[in-house]
Image 1 (cartoon, rainbow, N blue to C red):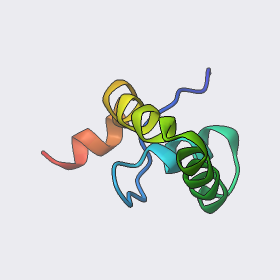
Image 2: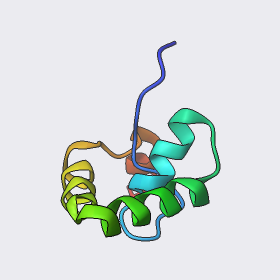
Image 3: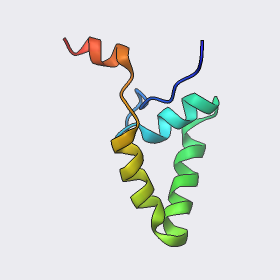
Image 4: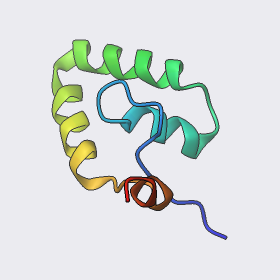
Amino acid sequence: MARRLYLGREKKIAGVCCGIADYFGIDPTLVRIGWVVFSLAGGSGILAYIIAMIIIPERPDAIDDLD
């Protein structure tokens, strides 16, 4: 079964960093720190986060829990 990138369940803002950490099998805190450094370095991290928040789908079982 192929791995898919979904928004994470441990949401701080939108679950983007947690979803990326789940996909690569690393700690979400490391991804969050990297994202902050990326954002402070040039500011494009904020735009990338917003784009990722829009294009990465929610996990299908998370959608079923809402019903």
